[in-house]
Amino acid sequence: MVAIRPAEPRDVETIRSVARRSWHAAYDEFLGPETVDRTVDEWYTLESLRAVIDGSDHVVSVAEDATSGLVGFAHVGPDPEDEGLAELYRIYVRPERWGEGTGSRLLADVTERIEGFDRLGLSVFAENEVGVDFYERQGFERVEVRAIEFDGECYEEYRYERDL
Image 1: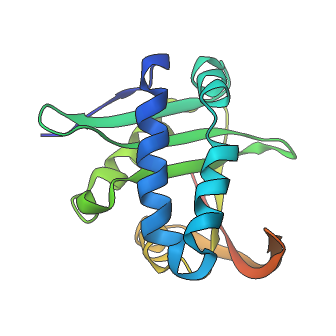
Image 2 (image 1 turned 180 degrees about the vertical axis):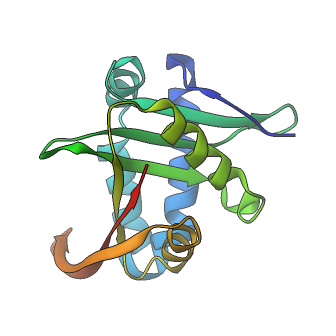
Image 3 (image 1 turned 45 degrees about the vertical axis):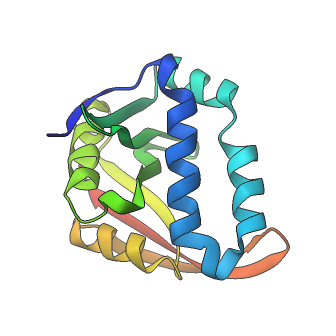
C-alpha cells in the first residue's frame, strides 16, 4: 500500500533518483539521455530540493510503500506572475509504478494542501504522451500551445489549467 505524506529534507536524494528514472522513461526518446541527465543534474540539486521542501509557500508530497520506499513525488507552488494560479512544477512516479494511481493520489494531496489559489496550471512537452494523457484524465484543459527552446532545440509545449 502506498502512503502519501509531506516531503522531508531527508527525501531529497531519493526524489532526485525518482526524477531521473522518470525523466529517462518519458523524455529519452526525443530529448536524448545526455540532455535528460544534464537537466536533472541542474534542476534537481539537493540544495534546491531542500529549499522547496522547507519553503512555506510550496507544497511537496511523496509517495512511499514499505517494500519499495519512495516511489513518487509532486511539487506545487505559487505562479510568479499570477497570484490566483498555483503551478504544478513537478510530478513524477517511478516508471514501473505508472498506471497504479500513485500520480493521481499525489496530485490530489498537493492540491488539497496548497491554499489561497483558485486555479492550478502546468506545462508539459507535447511529445510527453504519458504526461499529456495523465493531465487530461485529471481534468486539466489545454489553454495554450507554444513553441519553446530547450537545450538549443525547439519543441512544442502544452499549457494546461484546471480549477481548484
